[in-house]
Length: 312
Image (cartoon, rainbow, N blue to C red):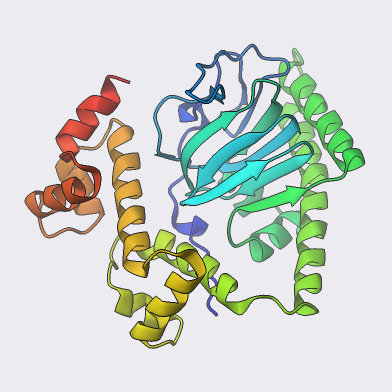
């Protein structure tokens, strides 16, 4: 099955645009740290008593991201896939993932590291960084041991001290060294996972579904027909549709429509794209056709959605 790495085509954006608390730490616009341990992040409570972080969802994050849960539970969604993080879990993804929500239980403690891909991956000679780039295809949830979490958190605290250190000429070198140390563990984990998967009877249909979602994430800007994705995986459209439905309980066409709509919402939420801009970016024939498509899937026009989003 084809691997669908799409992070290389994502345009890097300023880390200052990342949803974060007012006490987040940013180093040279290439490294951002945030947490609710040392930072007082205030968040509203939803109808289920969970804390909701961030402002506008969905949004497309334009940087590599790592979230680690120290206690409680985190609920989030990336590229239409739901993730539930428990104590000692980490969620890692490259730039380009669309985050549709981020909430957690009141007892939750977490920390976040956001990285510029150009600075830490594309222009980094470290072998572990190259290994991560080669082996990580889609967002991954890692169940760490308590010792691994403690080690990682210790390094996170070192990063905080590095960024806050006054008159430190080698701050970036120290930060890169610390990040590389943390990344070496992830690189080794990915290699071990790949080796373990080779010896297991992995459910090929579930693997197909995961690859399909990643393909939709990569190609939905231009391709919205099931025949394209079926051909991509060298399966007949009819059988391909059946496999996707059997695994997910939802038709392939529905997944495609939901992802196109998610992309459109993220663009409209950004506040710097007009309806016409979004229509063109998603390769619709014209803004009118896009408007009908969007309303059929959301119940409101793109302008209505953008206005509602701007009001919070």
